[in-house]
Image 1 (tube, rainbow, N blue to C red):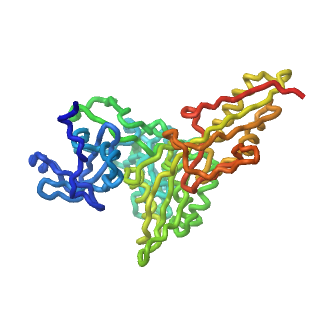
Image 2: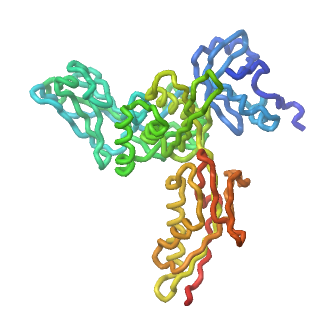
Image 3: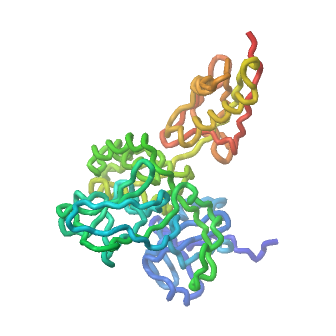
Length: 453
């Protein structure tokens, strides 16, 4: 059986530390390829975006060299000559739907700093490493049929620059601000001469799993069909006021240039695609300079590969805001899942035991979730018990920590501290790890009893 299936690795033995190399049997395909072209290498288990760096005879050299992650015989079977497909017509797609152009207002050259509200709270955002948040609004403004440029801050614009700035209020409404004649050009006088086109659609709903996008919203005569083998990442909800207060002062303090590890962490957390981040110094062998590694919990919580589009986007952002020539790398956090067994006692003469039990479950799901827990944060049994006792109706509580596991349900390499009774009191983890509760994988079954004196 399977005698005719070629399970050899998809890449050529000429692959090296700089490139993964593929050998094409059909020479005619070479005319369709060019340097810098994006490709997607896809198998039944995994898909990876790469870029053509070199074409030589029938060999194509692509980067990043993802074959290095599949060196073992077992891993090499993920990409074989039988199951690997290379897609060439690759385009970037972002979350959002283009809206019809609307009239924003009328310019008045006698006024300075005119601004107009955009009545939408679902504006899409695009990657732009030149902005402190790493993104800019997907808005296109024309004044008397001329395109004006979106900038992060008009205070850096010259008097004749055709610039505008986007500001967001606490209700997530956008307003478009124009110059005062000193910082950015004033608007020319005219009737309905300010127009805007924008796209709507944002948030974590855009973080789609591989192959989940299967239908074109509007048919296009140039597109017969498509495939989306890569996960969509980077979608984040609106930044909360508390998050703004925490991150904005630090971003100003660093003057948009990351120097210290703390600067990198604040820059990362200020990026819309990042939930959490921790920066580390990696001391290389001399004479190589010290490198910075930023470990990231991406918005949505999904881990990402070091050679993924998201990792490259974040790296570009950090490089642009760091001191020149500083080596920087971006890595995903390592998720760890906790398994716990809480027990509670409820005064049933005053509270409904089922209602209290459900409230405890919801409280633990929230407070021990991926969004709430921190990178490197240890798990204390006493802290879990304290969380349970915050719920009204709980007279007494206890909790057994069963362990910490990798998503594949195998025990994680963590440091466990036990009491004299043999029960786990604390689990310590590495700084790049994050230990949290996922009740979809490990069900949270709460033992509830009647409280008795």
